[in-house]
Image (cartoon, rainbow, N blue to C red):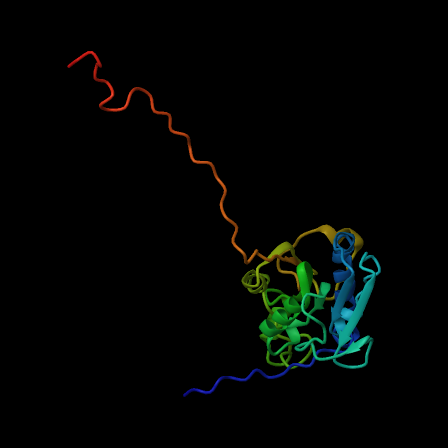
Length: 238
């Protein structure tokens, strides 16, 4: 029997500053989320991972925000992201900045976030785009062991497929920051690109009712015109 291939664990950076041009990536993501935070409502927001904890979410109308990281840096709760210490359906929003890129099992991580999200809850995903200049760097042996090229990069389409399996409705999908070393500008926050270094997906958890309801519909009324067969005989006949 062929042994299953093990995925080499990847360590998430403790800060955006540990990634080349990471501060530009952080600023670009914050610009993209500015128009969305007033639309994302709820009571509890989880910021999963060190990179999520550093994102500015002051524009969010969600009052209770908790940083969950695997170390003590910017942490409100220190825990493994693979086993979140929260009850089922207890969180309104999950912010996952580049968490999938640094996970050995991104499918499990999505399922764990799905577990704690309430019905119609929000999930915000950011990631590196493999179809970009960063993706070209990942193909270079010299750069492959360095940040951010050492991370696992998943395309927008692949992540959307994972979310569709969990029955999520994608509200927006964006690709931006074409040049890694360029400082993001405010007027670029609403423009859509292809081939950018960063991906953004905002989706909502949709839950179908498990109890089927009876279909209520009216049968078309059939009007019978004329007399019933056998009733047309004249009663005067013998």
